[in-house]
Length: 394
Image (cartoon, rainbow, N blue to C red; front, side, top):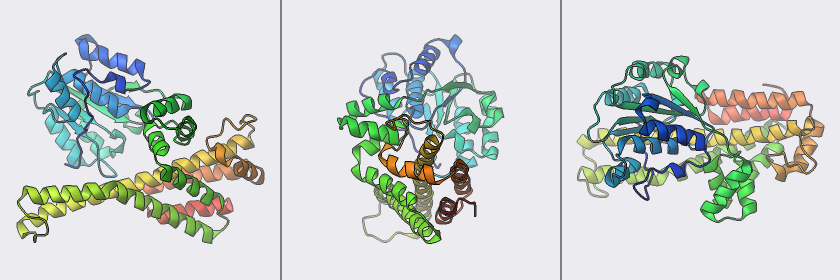
């Protein structure tokens, strides 16, 4: 199955509700449901912006449902993702496949083997196509008595109405920049100014803010990308900058996946008794080929996610330009996400009309849609940057 099981570490036998930062209302609702059958429902949808803690909350809820209070051994198993009554899916590909969805549905009909409930956690539920969503409908509508589904997605609008009608939705709040910066300082002991900048640039995405705050190279790449796009003046510039963005995203994807890919390959060969460097017998080649196919899907997703992050950064930059054009910033530029580029953004706001800026913002949305439809990343970005240079859609 194209899935990875969550490996949230556990420090104690207590349910880690405290790891779900800034979501007191959602935590209270799930704590009540875990302890009071009258407040329980068989299917939940946790929504919130990226980095808001959807996955962390889902796994804390699973721990509270499966383990008896005070059962340290079971709590550790659930939080480590090794308990037999927890099934977690986080797709490594661009979409959740029908095969994976059917496997989850099949598992959902098993009675709990050791715990109080069987819990099915589906992260990235927004990555289901309509046909895949339909596989889940009956299981969500009529699950066994002690099976609980927990879906996670950015918004309930990302799922079909037929799915939404079968779940109870919990909407997580978006934290403030100052709150995210404070959390990053506490977690990583970084300079408060860098933490604030990172939280602002990440648009309050906690995980991305953490990465920016602790990785100077990531901060430099983001700055270089935005400045590169600001310097696009023609088709030649568009092609060059698009190539640089794709190359950087590809390098990032390789860095994130290469070590894991090699470890998985070594583990597979060791499991079937093949020494390092020895020839792979024909009987094992199909298993190795299947692993390589899965790794390619993961690499594709990692690349797409990296480019999507660039598009989000570009949206923030042109959003700043619109703020300046409509006079919605304060005197110090405090309303700007990309405050460090304020002089360049003010010059652009004066040179462009709001209609031209909105054309670029709309084109960013179209580029994102095209990438979801498997458009070639370089061509999609080139088309976007031609619009940046000309103010017109190609």
